[in-house]
Image 1 (cartoon, rainbow, N blue to C red):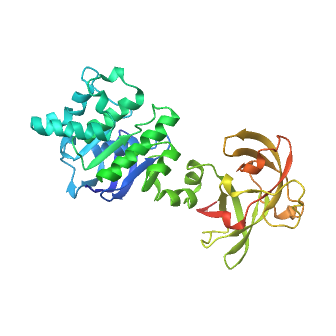
Image 2 (image 1 turned 135 degrees about the horizontal axis):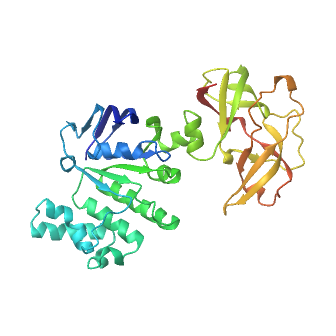
Image 3 (image 1 turned 180 degrees about the horizontal axis):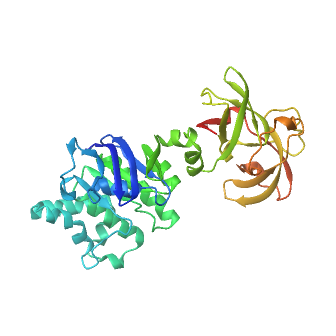
Length: 371
């Protein structure tokens, strides 16, 4: 198993700064996902680890060794590419054996390695076929097996599932995670798919504009995002500017564009002018006959769009103003916010219908960001 230490790394291409002050410590045997939008620097970071892209400044250690003068083939890494990068003129068996042959393993060791890898990636019956004769999922397994065949300490994945359909992606990502747990290699996985990152990772690194926004477990990244970018990028979120009016213990009363809301939080806001957020599934459907007047975190809304998603229904809501709020204390915004909710209770609701919504105070969280 192999660890990776990245310390104050910068990468520049001319005047363009692709990576800015990246510091990251990856323990041996950890599955780490680099998550972010296109152009955020995640693939550049992966290529610096692999040795394909040189550092402009900073340092990197792989397995405790400084990588400055280490070529890619000396870094104990293997790359699984988005495009598979298979040799079309070689059989599956010879694709899998490409690395062991380059390392000059004996014929007996090659045969043993081939059978082990083919079994691990479920390709035993496909060894005589050529890549163009395989399905997308099978080609991805060949690419994975070819990388595993050299027994690297670190596996690097550059969006390897983006060419597969949704159902096959779910299957192959499960297989990759199971192999990583069984073999114990360190995995560094690049994706812009939030579900993939949350499902596969021990640690998620959220990147934006060449910098790291947040590092944490999938649970922390989803439920305790540090700022608006992370909250909005990782899953759906309702984010509102909020002014803290008063505090009683861990209960806060805040003014928002929706009116006054209660927030129950053990994490204090960093300023009176802050942001709050909650996830669409954190809201409750209270029926159309309950009056919101005088009740905290209950407001009336009109359904402006409705989407059936199978196990849940998602609605976009146009909140109506709180009649009991003092208009003089209302927090103004550039535009009236729309609210997203995911709830089974909306399966029978219709577009244009007015409904009563409740957000439990314990489901609303402060973001570590002021405005």
